[in-house]
Image 1 (tube, rainbow, N blue to C red):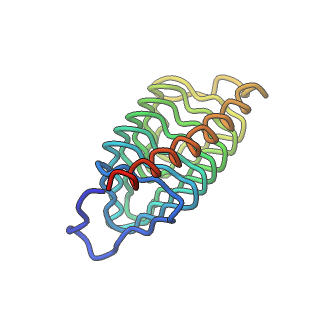
Image 2 (cartoon, one colour):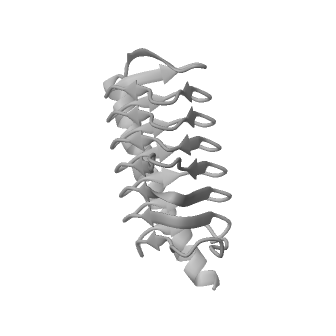
Length: 174
């Protein structure tokens, strides 16, 4: 894990979580049970907290930040795809934020929602549960299907298992 020399508050990481050595967690970052933070992720919580819920995963190259008055919170079993940006947004449980999506300050994402690849969720946008958001700016285009909800669950579970494997291998190599 990268340097945290910039701020006095130290990240809190559950022992069961996996955090890649190349990830930078700065400030009031909390990583809960079975969560995983992958390579080249940056989380900078200098004025507000960043919380990663149980079983959630933040994939390679993603950036999580805050705004004053807008912490970043991921609920349980959330997937944040590669190179996504989550900036001061609140994400409920069982959500998929696809690759390259951008969520801006004050956005609120309801349970079982999917934010499509490359979508832009604008400041303060409220995404109801079970919504699929696509486009720039992001628009709710339909209600997610049961099959899509199942995929959200499978992806989160797959990353829990993958995180355990990587954590075990990292211990072996040290």
